[in-house]
Image 1 (cartoon, one colour):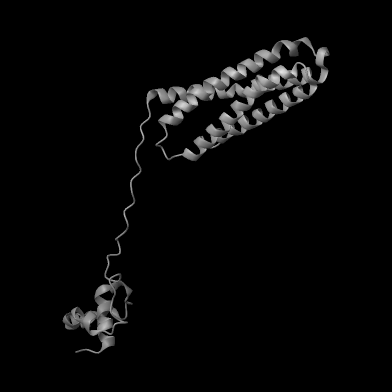
Image 2 (image 1 turned 180 degrees about the vertical axis):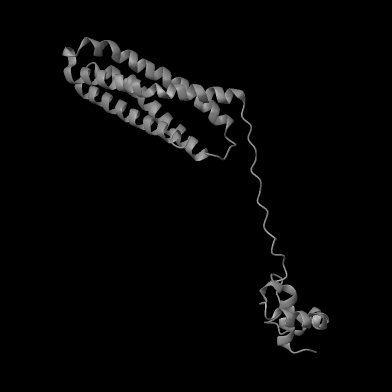
Amino acid sequence: MPPVPALALSWLLLAHPDTLTAAARPVADSMAPATAAAVEAAPAALPPAARPSAVTWRAEGDTVPRPRRRAVTYSDGYATRVQLHRALSWTMLPLFAVSYFSGDQLISKGGAAPQWARRIHAPAAAGTAVLFGANAITGAWNLWEGRKDPNGRTKRFLHSASFLAASAGFAYAGTVLADDARRSPNARQQHRNMAVGSMALSTASWLVMLVGN
């Protein structure tokens, strides 16, 4: 029986022939036929520390298969609602600007506010309410249809949650606080703060979806 180093060298020759240098290859090739039978018994003859493990004999190409992503199919209505949702979103900032500047004139000047501010503030607030109502419907509809799509799910839910919070703020500012603002300077300031905070939150919600799309 060959000594242990010879068995190990022979096993290395047959298992990993590419590791031999050009100078050692002729000698190793001449040894291979004579030691092939011995190498077959080498794992049993070698000491436990030198025996090749099961991992050593495993094919190098073996890999863990990755699960395939589930395909998600969207309807034609989804694309239509996305286009409508985006188009309405671009009108949000102009409405915010008109509402803010007209409302600032009403708060700061009271009865002496210019006529344009008196005439345009209420329609701008009503237009904002219509915009948020339409986008709430289209957004919630598409959120439900795409609930199984993992791509961008966190961003969609973050956008939806912040948008709903901003909508609640606008509703409170336009109903409860708007009525009190006609009689109390303190209520007018609260109305302004709630409206501006809702504008900031909805703008941030809009930017979340705009960036990266």
